Every structure is written in C-alpha cells, then in structure tokens.
Length: 115
View 1 (cartoon, one colour):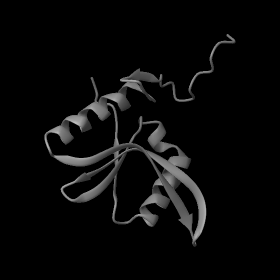
View 2 (cartoon, rainbow, N blue to C red):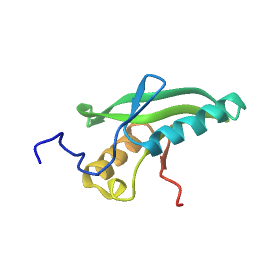
View 3 (cartoon, rainbow, N blue to C red):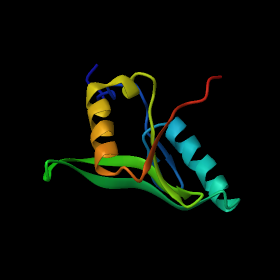
View 4 (cartoon, one colour):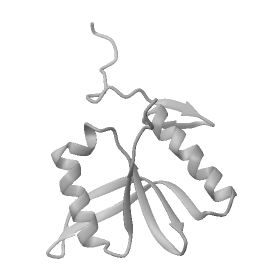
C-alpha cells in the first residue's frame, strides 16, 4: 500500500547496459534502431534529446524526445508512446509546438508491436 508510487501510465522502468529506459518497449525500439544504425540504414543515433519549444519568440517549455537520428539525410526524432499517452493533451500540444518550431525535422511516434 505505501510502497513505491506507480507510474500513472503503468509502465515499469527497465535497466539495460547501465542505462534506464522508461519501459521494455522503449528499450526494444532502442535496440531496433541500433541494428538499423549498424546496417547503415540510419546514422547519428542519440537518446533523450532535449528541444526548446517557443511561441512568439518566447520559451514555453522543453521537450525531451526518446530518439534522434538521420534517415536518408533527413533529421528524424522519435518518441515511444503507448496508445493512451499519445492521446494525452500535453503530448498533443507539445508535438504541435515541436512541429511549428522544427519544420525540417520529421516527428515519428513509435509504439509497442501487438503480440
């Protein structure tokens, strides 16, 4: 009852190679992207990249995206989301702000593969 508080979306952090991921799905996607980079399908792979979001030239907030990489010379960011978190109002607003601030970066949402 008084143990560790649960995440509001029910995901459980997992540690691999000394790095903590927010969920098993996020870890799985990271490993997929690493394989794509090894096969040279993508390059410049990074985790937990922070972007400043502005409106009318004023800083509003930061958005930390799970992955950033280059796919065929085009910059891409990707965020791992469950079906419920991708519908959250704060995520929708931040995604729109990101797209307005960084129109040259493709925004992708990844999610767990169905069993």
